[in-house]
Length: 121
Image 1 (cartoon, rainbow, N blue to C red):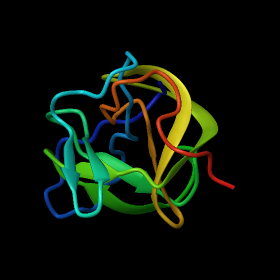
Image 2: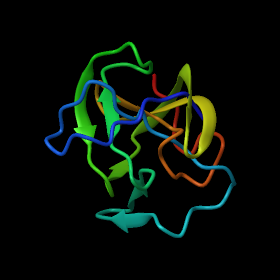
Image 3: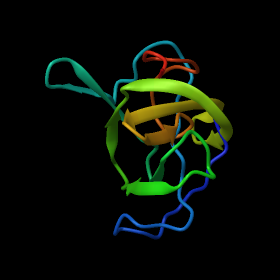
């Protein structure tokens, strides 16, 4: 899981730094995830951090928004990008949560060190 920046100061959704996003280690689904509408799985971001959502799978990409503490995300696809370290380890896996919106898997509790969704094309 990958190297990220943690921002604990912004409640407004804007940030200079901010965490990237992280994944967990292990092959089983974490107990804290939730399933909503039509089987969509929502994964929790690491507790106590805000996570930067970026235009591309690297920390140099533009921040498009910031996820607040206790957020959950649905992963539409995953890709490899910049290596980031976070609460769930160090990884180069990035989670696409919407078109043009990526978070490092190092901040998302997926229950796996690898891919849990299809690869982005």
